[in-house]
Length: 310
Image (cartoon, rainbow, N blue to C red; front, side, top):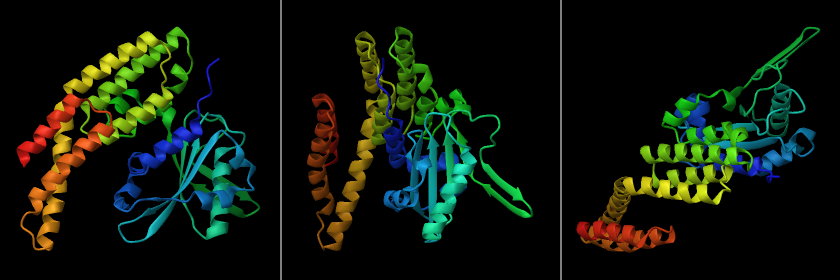
């Protein structure tokens, strides 16, 4: 019997790490108006205080996050993210989204932008995205955003240029590889190779690619030792082909740091700011790469880049 996967923790990690990319994928209008140079504020305590007496919030089938996102206008919006992590809930999702909205408004006089992420189809009797009430002349219609993970196109996710795409892809495929049978292990192996190739071919930052691979590795856990070794060899070959991209990224990092050091030196009346920045950053880069477990050969190559620039 395979151990139960912690959907709640996994989704929360993904959301907190790639929130701008998630917003771009699901509510592009908000992304265009948002100022993500200011870190979003996760209002965990406010949400907990709001929903503490709600039985809906106690279910392990849901993940809820309340986030404050700064806008370019200087104002801020509250965004309620609700994820149905294992498919069917025990109540109509639109009723639940309306309840959350009312509770937040009652507590804080804030009307949140709402997004429900559905990993599996809801019952046919439901119409996700709309809550309607019409009784004896009293009418209410509440509309919120929905994103259907199960309805996303595999090819588009694998060919997309949003770092959240591979996360959506593995979340969609969870049922396919959840288990430890031989057939499941080969499916996991196939999915891992697909994502590894995707990451290798994208121009995303090293940190983004590593974090995506970490999230993918959490949900796709190979247990077959032979397949583990085969995938490690496959991924190692890909990384070898991609070294120049990593070098390019690090060169940009060095250049940015040197410019900051030079600007600081000029402001302090010193002409040697850039050369000091180069020397300091060579040591910093080497230490950072060593702490990330990079090979001595690769670190030596990056040191050479630093030396040539000094």
